[in-house]
Length: 147
Figure 1 (cartoon, rainbow, N blue to C red):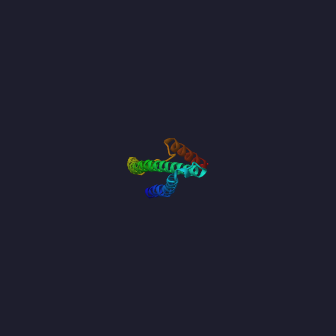
Figure 2 (cartoon, one colour; figure 1 turned 60 degrees about the vertical axis):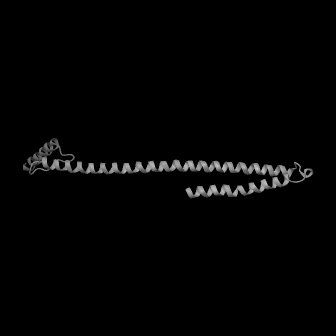
Figure 3 (spheres, rainbow, N blue to C red; figure 1 turned 180 degrees about the vertical axis):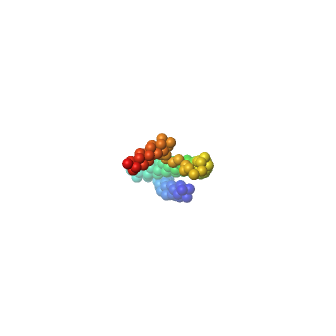
């Protein structure tokens, strides 16, 4: 982008300066004529209007270049801030992932360590109430099979 701004700056000064100097030179040549030939005719007014237009165009383009440089600097600062933010978020994500793995390991180990031998650790829907209901259903079935 810096190269583009430099090329734009160069273009403004070369592309607009040459016509400006040509116009200025023509006005100077007209002013150097003998007194009786120096008149304020439509050609002279057109040259002055062209010179004013070229000056205005140079100012507008110079302002645009200045604003573009300023915008580029602001965008570079924002990019650096976003890069820093992304780096911090990546580090935070890594810490969260490590903490999650530690919790899974710790709680998984605690659940199997607290389960008595021969018993299976409780999962999802296995509660003491469900176990009692299942035992009751098993007893009813065995009684029904006896008769």
